[in-house]
Amino acid sequence: MPVIIDHDPEVIETLTALLPTGSHGVTGGDKLDAWLAHRTDEYAVVLGPNIPLDAAIAISEGLRYTRPSTSVILVRSDFDTDVLYRAMQAGCRDVVRLEDDAGVVDAVARAQQLWLALHGGTPGTSAGHIITIFSPKGGVGKTTTAVNLALALADHGARKVCLVDLDLAFGDVAITMQLFPAHTIEEAIGAEELLDFSMVEGLLTRHEQSLMVLAAPSGPDARDRVSASLISRVLRTLKKEFDYVVVDTCPSFDELTLQALDETDECVILATLDVPTLKNVKVAIETLDLLNIAVDHRHLVLNRADDAVGLDDTKVEQILSMPVSVPIPTSIEVAAATNSGTPIVLSNPNHPASRAFSQLAATLSSDLGDEHLTHPAESTGGDAALAPRRRLRLRK
Image 1 (cartoon, rainbow, N blue to C red):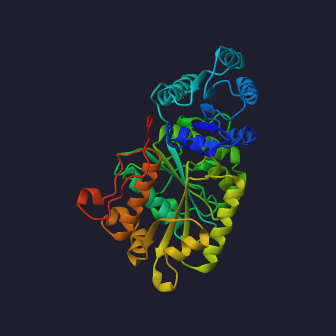
Image 2: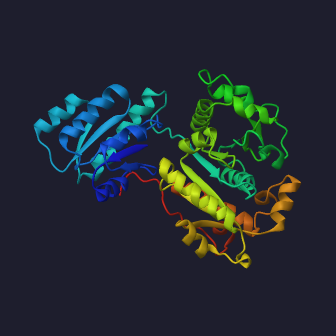
Image 3: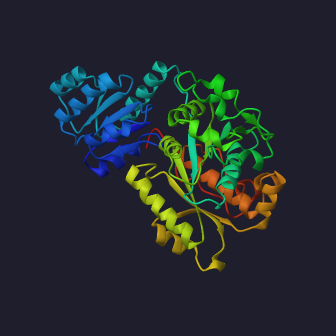
């Protein structure tokens, strides 16, 4: 994705509106290195007009050697032949006027084509998206949410979706879906440098609804032998082959969870209506802020939402300073469906909880630019249809 650098937040907002969903903005070149350190697939750096020319030239010269496949696009309010010459010498691939919307769009599109060509892709190829389910507290329904969300995104095989169980010590994805995996991520230990999709594919287990699952090891001892670099390689490999990769994490900020969160495109934070959980979630959100993880790409899901306990959406939003994206209602039928091995979105698609999971899927897919995934109410005539909030757009 492109990353935009400018001192003026309004300029960043203007440029972001022109670029693909998921583009990020930083307010200074000093933050660029930290942003790029863990993101190897940023194909364009857009230098805004408020970045001094000398600083922009220095950034471009640095990236020419450290990230030669990342295109630098210089945006200026105005420029002359001297600016063009210096930009060319520094390795900028395009110089565009700020008011030239089409020029900015075309420059970024060319940058993407170049990156894909250099990395073995073809123009028009798009990588998938990683969605991480996280909560700092166990027992809040994280695995149930991950399973039902993955099934809703897969839409009976309409999309390629892989569900990764990253709770390596006590993962329950396989048993929740009544799967009996012959292989797990444990078999990839030590193969970080050699790992490719043909190897990862051999570790996957297929669910009857065409959902692929990368199961957790059968014993908790394997957790200590799985490295963060292996998790990074696995997720990036899966991202190239699937439309969505849904990751179920363990309830802690361990090294592996942090790596998954660092790789994620959208983060679903799960909470329930009890004070201890909300306290832990608030601390977790503050930690994510400090680590600059998934900023502006977080979705708060309120599970077992029942205002009879004395808390409601409004109070939760006040406590966490974050809007509730989707409330999932309390229902014993959700637990019964899980125990039967047929998650609620399959056993009862019209159940309120199923519709909530489908709404979450539609919200996430809309934010990620997939405008084809709709809330079930759109096809059944219900009144809870979800209007997509953002779509992938290359022009205003």
